[in-house]
Length: 250
Length: 250
Image 1: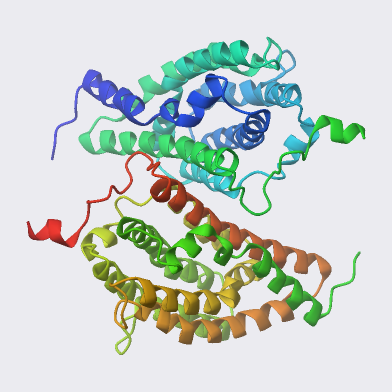
Image 2: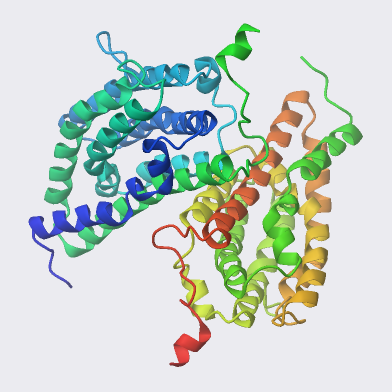
């Protein structure tokens, strides 16, 4: 049996997965952050990515439903609060709908989850099921894409503010908040994975889980690119012009 | 409550879903059947579609695991036999590997399921889980894409024989056999759905299940097109040159 790598070596291995496969390398993000997306490409991204926002607290509840340690559940609960909101925090889902409104979409349409690409649903649902079915170690390891999120959120805020009229403090508050929320989640998650992946086999499992999660993110952007940059929109998906705020007024 | 449509009207509705959304309308199939695919595009299709072949008997076993009627299980069992084989029938999976070999791929590589696109797995796994989680009616209705399969298999056999050197009776035996097998399955499945969808609500559920299945098929070809026609191969997926029979000999 192979010996486990040291915590430091193993952390390096996990970070290398991000360097190799995180979706900041996907051409859609260059296009979005560089100001080259059309308004409809931005809308398609907002509509489809909403399905991810919608599913993340479901994923976290699925995780908590399998945890027997109240301390771990208590720590994890803040992730659901961050997305669903509290008395004093509107939460990430509402912030995402503010972004939707800013790009001209009817938030009710976005929230209805009509027009979302099947490929988006297949990928995101695969993540929810992964967390429901795999070991807790794999579930936590899959969440570690948050390690790589602050850099992309900073780039995104900067790029959107520079290139798009819809971008301001209100419409981008989702990303601003994630810059504050993600680091505390990921500091805990990383330490938990380093502590619990105490054999080479478990380290391999955790690394594979993180790779799986990068696949989930990448596949969503591939589908978006194919449908809305290349213009091969699959049957039944959002068509430019649908779900706009103006359409509701008419 | 809306009244149920007549069996004839409902069958028409189901067939219309195929006319509108079945993957015979996807540009990848025009390209494949028209002889415009490169050898590597054909190989990428064979490798990825293998995951579907691999998963179909698992899907059918999941269905049978939920059926309490021995008669229905007995009828359904022939689908597993068709794919996994019997003493007198090598089965569809082995036939697919014969196709893999004919296009220059190492069957062991294909069978290893390395290099398959995550988007392929997400879509196919969504189908297996749909059959595991939804009502039996929805599970059977989802299988009714077989209604539309004979036409595409006939086109495929004709197109491949005309345009590709690898095509002959042995390499295409998978499709030849499906022409014999699918009609018996689908005649039973269609009648079962017509009999059991006896309210408007159940008819809507069955129609949505069939639409879901067309999405599963379409998303696989979108991913293939994006990766291997447009050349945006996601991280970790099959690279042209990998998994070839010649590479094994060297």
